[in-house]
Image (cartoon, rainbow, N blue to C red; front, side, top):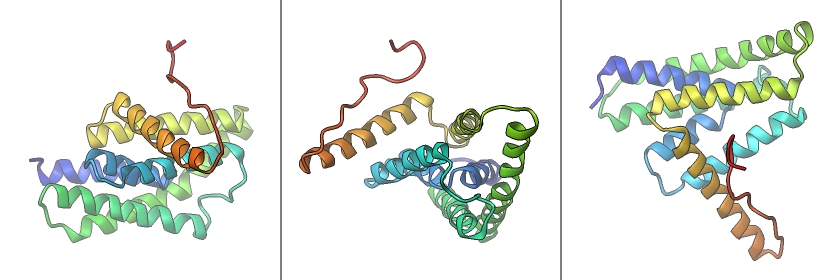
Length: 180
């Protein structure tokens, strides 16, 4: 069992994750808790990461996209504290605030990296993905391999559902550096 301070620290890390990728925090918690519905959470997170690279969504700092991030931060912290049997109603609220703050600050940092330094936006998006995945791993105790496996399970589930509809999409056999 983790101490209150450790759970609080990890929930704040997850709040940053939620502020940058709304669906990733709940997905990581669902994988960590081995929830039955984790494939849905992971599929939503993968979809969000893809949409982020297409640059078709409004800024996450706008209220319609900030609110789900705050809600995700709240839910994630609540789940983390419940899992450890700790009752701290203020922690979930603080996590929501940190997620909203991150959602406000992250686009500013992204603009600096793209417009001032000149890094392509899609590359900055991939850098953000890596950052939040590593931070989420640290906060949940999951390994990158466990996250990869959860993503492959989610993709396999989506593929099966599409196959049932007559839509056939090949699934990659392996992912990551050194997999060729």
